[in-house]
Amino acid sequence: MRKLPGVILMLATLQLLQSVAAAAPNLSISNWQARGSQMWRITFPGYASGLPNSPATAGGASELYYPQSGQYTTLNYEKELSPTQTLSLEAGLLGNIMPATGNDSDWDYSQAPGLWYFGTFKTRGSSTFLNVDIKRRLKNSTEFFYGYGYANSRYNMTQGYYSMMDYTPVATSLPALNSTYSLVYHGPHVGLAASRQLSPRLALVGSISYAPLSLAQGHGWWNLRNLEFEHLGTGQMLDGKIGLRYTVAGRQNNSITLGYRYQRYTLYTGSESSSPDITWTEATKLQQGWYMGGNFAFN
Image (cartoon, rainbow, N blue to C red; front, side, top):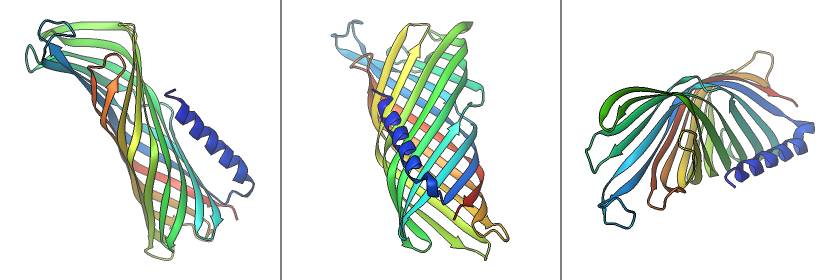
């Protein structure tokens, strides 16, 4: 069920593309050099006797951190539906996250405030995002838009290494580690896009969208523990970009844009399927960096 909203959104996007492809008036292709990370944390209570029905005492927490940097290829398609309304479809794909070292931290507050466990692992994976919007022109240089956004990140953890266990420094490798985790954010958003002409060929452009209430869904498979679990919660999504657009001489419908993009997805609160006592307390995905792209109009 966790994959169904993404599948529906992709099918709807394909259907919309097919319905308007015969008169595609505007297409842009960008390369976004994104850097960032994804982290999430759960908390859980302790029990005086070690049994679930005993009085709760100081508990613990677990936190995972995944570096997430790489090159997104971003496609944006726009179709004018009326003089004041435009359909916009955007898809971003990061096929291979840059290999990096992530970490796994655990705390047991009933014993001590410091780290009970700390380990590292090699991280690989992929990331995608989709946005489907209707834009309404407010002025010649400003548009209000509303739509739906979807973002999915997948991680693979290998080559594990313990450096702390039971509050004691250790040096233990985990060559059999081959665990996975994925996290999806999706929900409706609203936003504004604007431009300001600086010269006949140069313009300042920017946009920002915000999803105040989105659904966050995580899925983990810890192969060394034979443990599969689900995360479910509510969060928010923010996506903004600003850039300079240069219109190619003699090609009024073609332009090049250089700019900066920032995405931040965060969790309000959530739960984990492995136990009703576990609270999914944090999940933050942050990506930012320079992008460069070309715009091509077919009309």
